[in-house]
Figure (cartoon, rainbow over the protein chains, first blue to last red):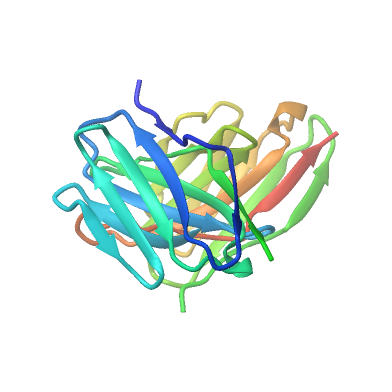
Length: 111
Length: 114
């Protein structure tokens, strides 16, 4: 069935380094992908999105890369800061009501 | 600024009790969702509503019901709480604008059923 998964459940990076969080998806019909950040005690918060007709999109300190050939999505965070410590979810949507969320990757930032 | 509020941050109930979780949004969004979040399982959709008085089952509706009498309010009801319903419950909203699927989440309600 369809699934959105993450390669690593936890990621630990040094403050100031770049972080890369990976995600695999299996539904080739998905045409919209989103990254969410969830801080402790809060609900998920939208970070950045990308449509299937693009392979890269940049935001403020974040970049999302989409490789449709291997059904892979990644989130890159530049100059990682302590405030970036959170759980990151990728999600996919085929244009309907349903969004499929991955299990999440916990990012630890070491000072 | 987008705001989604949930009636309780923490809730402790006993097996068999009827539980109401309320979600209120101030963004005039048509779509509202209820998810539960469990470690290692991500977010799973329980129910969603695409308009007032309209509701659709999600992936795990068993043991739950919902109510949407007003656009801004979406309630999740556990008719008879069971211990396997101990979880984090997240409400989300989304505007019905083309193919954008940005969902805005509330802070969550952590429910413990004893």
